[in-house]
Length: 140
Image (cartoon, rainbow, N blue to C red):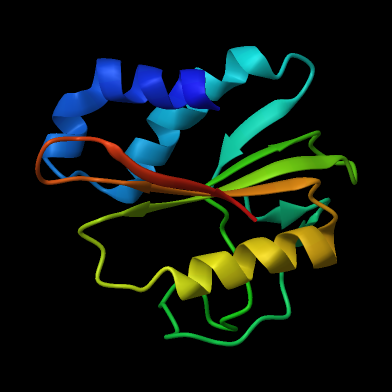
């Protein structure tokens, strides 16, 4: 994980300074993680549990237009084997410029482990809009 985060800072500091969308940052990190997980799929915003939408039993937050039941989840990055129950790592990213608290992401990570069998869950907070640094990495 540390090598991929270092690569993100080294190669993509410009997008962090520009405070681009979290999805763009997550995608770049996922691309740096892939070589460390041969035989696994590294996906962003992957919302499937086999053929069904990926859902968690967690408290609701605001309902988004593309999430009508407020229970479908779109993890930032997952390392898994598509179409199986092999769920290895789930990662939630947060920009320091986000208006949302960390609590919901941390609750989601716990639920991914407990309800969907992910072996590891990681919360990454990255500073954007200024000097890019990794604020924190928290294993949940």
